[in-house]
Length: 538
Image 1 (cartoon, rainbow, N blue to C red):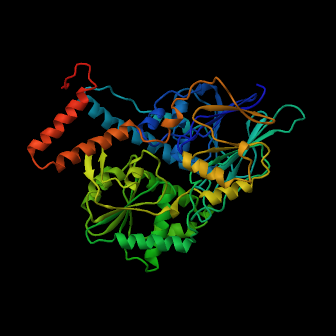
Image 2 (cartoon, rainbow, N blue to C red):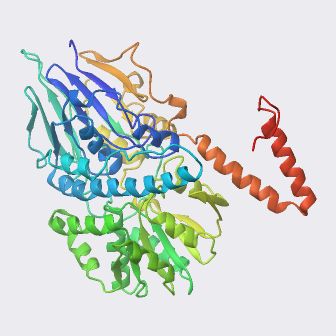
Image 3 (cartoon, one colour):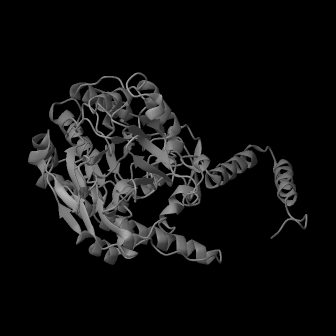
């Protein structure tokens, strides 16, 4: 192979599904192998075959344990991968709780889907992977501390730099040897970069002078207000106070790993300092419960580890492990806080909590992180008046609020500063892990920092040769699994859900039976116009 080759199999024009394949003379490796989240069209990619042969991959370097970076590793193993998975010690420990949880969620959701499919005489589906695949995957992990080089393949080495995003998270520096006096090719994958005032993480770091930089852009177009730790807690305090109702609840959809622990720390501190009353806090997530034990194990590595440990000992903090304990939360009386996964309301127990509370004006839903396009979280955040959860319709009466200061991602100015600190950049910058507006926003911030011709915006499954004079797109490569215009967009499933809600609204607004019959007749006529027989099918 004349030049190393890089293909973007995920997080290209979108935020999730991080997976980058690097082909070299030494062999093929992956940087991350994550799940797609968002619309059903994107999530269906998780079920499709990989666009490469899993048994041809020699190794994986995992930046951190979030499922959109690690979630397809067991599938990779299921289909033939048997190489090493390189990660930091904390990432390895977190993967040990997150991947089994992912398999369990799939099992539950597939069982529910197949019950509905059987009722409608539709085909069954199988989980992407099961607990046996997870067990086999976890045996392949190799632990490496930050800042130390380790061999990935003969002639190819890597090291981790603190990314400031999550316990154990790292940017990945790779050196590809070229077998002669030519210096090695140096690449840096930012992975997810944390913000300046991350509660538990120190500032992100990384080397300068690389040949190619692959950088996230999740919040590339966003400018968060500058907020110290005290200011962040004050804003959280105000949101909790505004949500307080004698018969109400504050629901916080939260990623189970780090976001939940940050919220526990800050709410616990506000209560301890008398800024809030002694409110019951229920962490409704088995994953968050197990992840919290991992955080407790590594608390000395955290910036505010002692504060976290104090919060975990609070008498008002309760963890629900079993399904029965979770269901019992529906019977809790008096104002309380529920922190439940998933953070984008895509799956998990938060959906049950929403079914119980979203239609009540005594409830508040507080988003504390990024909501990808097509997710239920983004739909609620955008002001939906009604939603569908598992085929059932609910009117939205709860207050919907957002507090973005708990995001695990740097905003636009912070990303630009991180990139500036990596200069000089010898060749090109790839902007990934962001939607189109965010990518363009970050590119605009870099005007005068990186030449416009050197800022590349890869799309899904696009391949580049990494030459000595810059990246070169490969023409004639296999087509993308999903066209760029369908990535990070609402899809037909979202449209159908919206249509059903609109139909129900129209019928409810009709003054009498006759008018409802008119609406139904018009709908049938519209459906029949596209039917070859011209008649309504039963």
